[in-house]
Length: 191
Image (tube, rainbow, N blue to C red; front, side, top):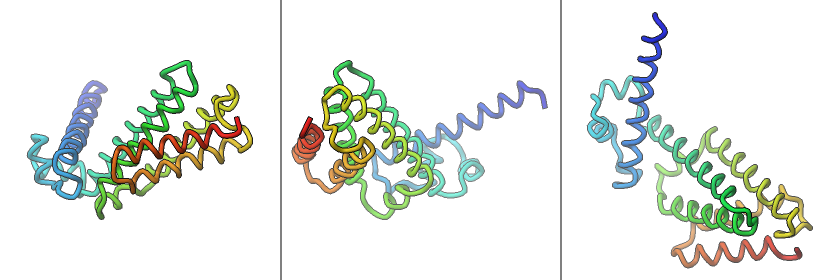
């Protein structure tokens, strides 16, 4: 098969996958994770159900692809925040706050469908990336004297991630902000 033809087919396949995942994202945002169906995705994507099944064998596969993109977008957003300012304390506050808000929204998803997609290899990879991001940010902040240096950076990163994950169980934006403040104060103690 000529290279141009192969490239065109590959581009088409990727466009179909992107359309399915983008449509799934919209449907999840509008209707909630548990209400999304294969029929809705096919109709809203503008592709036939038979075509949809050629790309994804079931709803779980589509949700896994959507979640993988969703998590990657969160990691990229946090990484960008970690580079936005020369002020390390400001960068740390931005990343800590953003991650707490992500956890808070994740807690709102709830249900069996959310539990099903918040597992798997892509989630483990994302957690490793998140841990690396926090370790680098905290190491830079420790060198600059903006966070405590009496605890190894890997432990501090682990603590920070787990502390902020508590936002999943909180009930208001105000409580999330208090959690962020307590976490930041703990990171700054004994500087």
